[in-house]
Image 1: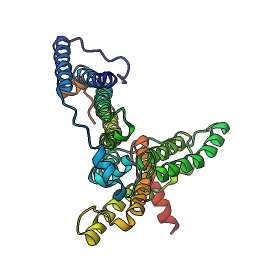
Image 2 (image 1 turned 90 degrees about the horizontal axis):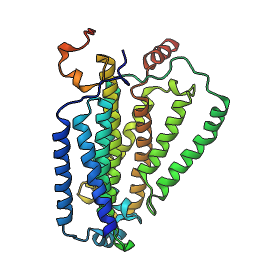
Image 3 (image 1 turned 180 degrees about the vertical axis):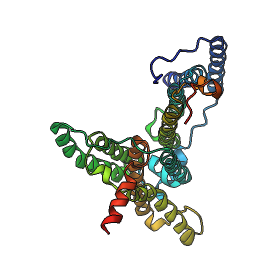
Image 4 (image 1 turned 45 degrees about the vertical axis):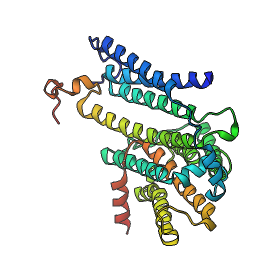
Length: 238
Length: 110
């Protein structure tokens, strides 16, 4: 029994008061917005500290250096969400292979290497212009989604341990580098000045791979369906 | 100034529209969409505070925060969708009103 399309829309007496209240909230928030005095922002501080940050783009410098905690926690949130999705259910990937059209297969074969190339170009450029781990990661995720909807035969045979390692690559690299800073600079996440740009690039590449894999796995919606059968097959051949 | 104001007020309006829909809509998918609306409103408001007519004074901090927020919003939406799918599978309905009184549910026992 699917009630996707034909569920009865609630006709309740709550509608009018709620709309009135949220309109009041709108007016209140707008009034607050108008009464905020312009403080000028943090642009000057960021600009003055930029040479020390190891990145030429101010947004990347803020993301990975000045507010590195935010990004670390964000990568953790992404990891937690895939953890939640995997513990709730299995991905509903087709068990039997669907016949995908030849045109789609060849298009995907052409596109995937190009997308991976562009993703890493974006990560590489992230230290200078707009771009970085998240933009590159989302393109990697798009490549993964394209593979998922094209039903590539190899894809359902990927053992989940590879995916698991990919998910933790970003967070673990980030945390290890942050702890490494304790030994060199006595402060958590205070990168040593000599190799700061290399460290940032390391973090960005690891995070991009993790973000791409995680988003694509979230699209699949659960842990791999055939995990147990593959494990059995491997066990029987050994 | 007036352009910034238009964007900010639009952001607040999106937030309030999403909030209204979150309370009034009973389908879980619509609730998730409503939360996304609210998030978009907040992002629009935040990114507008970063704007400055002088390119040297563009504030990178709100931009970085919005970038972080977008990724968090995407991942929470994905988790919420997985949960909503599970609710639909288990109870046969993803309408929130019917979920609360479990006794009145369609009698599916598994």
